[in-house]
Image (cartoon, rainbow, N blue to C red; front, side, top):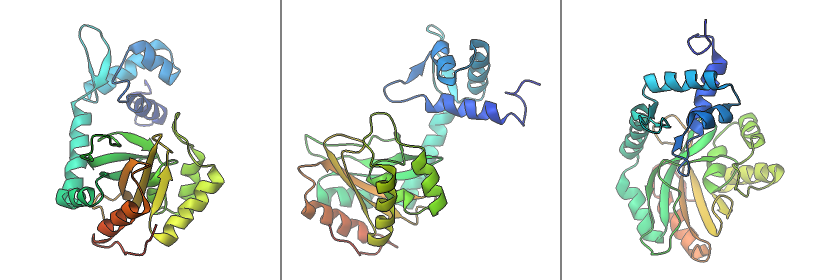
Length: 251
């Protein structure tokens, strides 16, 4: 039996997930050649996996270019995550944090071995930093990544840190990152400077009650020259008013 159809075909499942992860904001479509190269498999195998994903609604194919893009099932699941997040965390709460700081605020949630920005309210300033709604990041870089890691068991943290960060990121060395995660557990918040976005500074607080069964964090990010200690403290004060988050911080 072909592995893509076999319930024991774990390799095929991993390959299918790898195809989905290959799509990014900078690369929203993939040709069959690119998919085969991404998976390092022969073209017929890549074709079989892509067609299976297409048949289930996870990919869609342009009839003219024959290139693949993400399908309606991905949009449905993404919308479900966003709606669940919105029903759990009142949008007015995040907007209030944005208004208190003037900077972009978002909810980041762990999805598999990564984190995804599932809700975001951008700064109203002409010059601003955004995480990008729906964009995923490694857990090995950024304030939100550290905050989420702080909620996980130590063995899981070490496994995720060992995966490294995304190309283009500027993560802390693994040993220092592990120390930072332990520090987050003690002080209740994480910070980062230029780890995922150059010139940006972020502060994030672990969120224990997101209602989605996944570790999350509220993240406030802006240009480093505007993220003064006063702004960071205002962010932490506003976040601390949320249910279940103690006000035990000071930047």
